[in-house]
Length: 475
Ligand code: HEM
Ligand code: HEM
Ligand SMILES: [Fe+2]
Image (cartoon, rainbow, N blue to C red; front, side):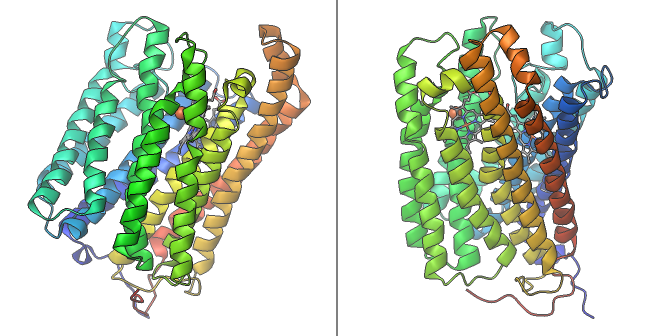
């Protein structure tokens, strides 16, 4: 029996760096799920780990792990494709490795500090050393600065490689997008005691990342992925990419107004935010149509079935999770009632998973294929049940959690907001209502389904293609 070992001789220098990022991303993905399960369990048993591992800390680790693993996944994806696109070796391999280790060590220290220092007063010192206090980007100031340095190294490496090699439509969009992505992070780094101003700038990072720069980034990865996996025509995907990027920035930038409805910003944001954010699903429709069109044109014939399955999951997940579930609560007339309820969590889970987890997983499969020596990977290889079932369980689990949270969110909207007029008493009445609590139970059940999916995913990534003798099919 042949055994195809993971063999780094199959990889170019950029791809060797990428594999490190992918492994770290998967580890953090697993950590995200573990902490998600604990946070969900604490909704059902509020005394669980009380004063040992508090909900606030568990939740923070859950979502911080997510942001970091996705960033690792994206950086890995770009290191993976850069030499292919530029037609020359990566300029600074040493620096790329250094940045990887610095970043990973910083993340480890930050998480250990979160875990060991659970509570305490916030001061200027804690801002620098423990926690900066902005949801999703709570990392303390010293780590912020470290992250900026690592991102600058990354940016230099990618831009300089293209500059010394050749440019393409995809790489041009990619590099401009990285400038915006790094620049926006700075908006989340300075301190103001005014909570309205703080929220105002904080959304520049959060909204502008996930609804503008990250979307463009995954647009580039998708374009490249369709060329690699399906053999799609470069001129076709590049044209689509330009259209999608124009629409995305056209709606996403002013769409930030949907977070400015109730934080003390001027009233005109109700109109601007409602109008532009309502247009945000349009480019996402374009992305689904594009992916399905390209797949249909190639009779869905491709050289990596699991990767293709996840690319399709991305196209639909992005459209439904971000587009449809975002649209549902984006008009101020509706958001008045849904804001700050489990609606947000419902949309948040579906969108982050559907838009970003999926495409990272697709790239992991593209990478594993080459690392094993370009073996055939299809729906009928031995052990294919693993990738199929992990794909089914992960998607089913997250959609199940999304629906459970939506039921809870509806209940909060009716009881807490409509009936009780958003009072403190109304908040508790909603929390204690039967439907809300059942939603929390179902979220946990589907959380375990998601967890089963990730166990299979890890197992599959470690084994797929190991005993495969057939070579890749050329597309
Ligand atoms: C992949 C893209 C997206 C991701 C990852 C995402 C994720 C999230 C998350 C996590 C939140 C909760 C933030 C918090 O903690 O307060 C949120 C809020 C929100 N999102 Fe999205 N979103 C995406 C796209 C969209 C789109 C396209 C729309 C509109 C069409 C939208 C509309 C909203 C609105 C209105 C809120 C505020 C909810 C509230 O009032 O609490 N999102 N989003
Ligand atoms: C085992 C599966 C999971 C469970 C049990 C779980 C549970 C939770 C819980 C309890 C919270 C806190 C909600 C609150 O404050 O009310 C949360 C927040 C969040 N989780 Fe998960 N989670 C899981 C998987 C995931 C996955 C796969 C993703 C995305 C890839 C994700 C993304 C998020 C986001 C974005 C938030 C913040 C939502 C907001 O601010 O509204 N989670 N999760
Ligand atoms: Fe937004």
